[in-house]
Image (cartoon, rainbow, N blue to C red; front, side, top):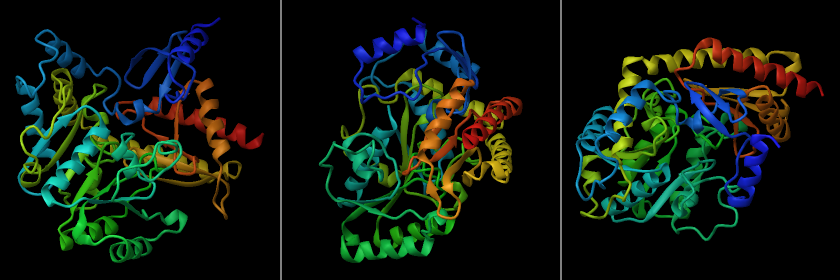
Length: 429
């Protein structure tokens, strides 16, 4: 019995099936944009721990910062005896995040916690309870996170009922025939027929949908949302959990639209693999919760905060925002070249911002019917050749690329070569 087979048997006996795994291989070690399993097989990592590793596996700065912190202390709980790294990282984010006016930041452990707390703060600030999210959104697996999420399987199926007064409006998607005008018309109807705007605390939106299929929010739509929120006293929350920290060719995805949200949720690549999330927002808004109303035992842990400070240093010193834009060009040009080949007519669309790039696979370019089976087959087939690749999309037919921004062009092209050759093999079968 192989090491992976043995570990999978142990996993099946010890871990519930709801905690699904993409591949039957167990990681032994990793470095930058590569990892090796327990049997010594090498993989190029195009998943990045689902957008957690923009600075790569075990970045030298992150390792050094965490090791130095571990020599001092590992935990006190910030709400008991605070520590400087929490404050220093909050100061850094307050300076970086494009929210309105003076800002304040709180830290948590997961992206779902950040989303939950942003809604708590919005309700405390406005005295309202309603929330609007968008179709195809993903905001976490907690009860409020699931309520906000706009995809049923596998995230919401069987887990209801969900918190009340959460409403969904269409997210514009030109490829699937949902224009900005249509999306705004539906939203206007929602505000006239379903909920009075004076009862809405917040709208929450991803600048680029992650699990929903890497759908890019048009700038004019985000600008329209900002105006609607201003007209009705509604807070606008940008969910930057997957788009943040240089992934889209800007430090934050919302910067492409030129608008300023009232709050922003962040996690994933904030701390280079350590559990840390944040909510940053306009100071007046962030001050709305009473003392003791926010926090958590592990929220803003000292090792995670040390890692977060190191990540921000690495992004700045290594020019990873600029690197993301260049890497995005490489990825987009390669995928678009594949789509032009007669043998790869299954590629219906290539889209993204910066190095947050995806391709949508279809059975027919005219009908744009989803090729979900081909998508699943591709993910499994490239893994056998040494590439870790993720799918997404409400119809399960989108291949997304979240390779660390620190990966070399040569390594990225090696991974793209595997995608191209494997997709040709599967298409010809």
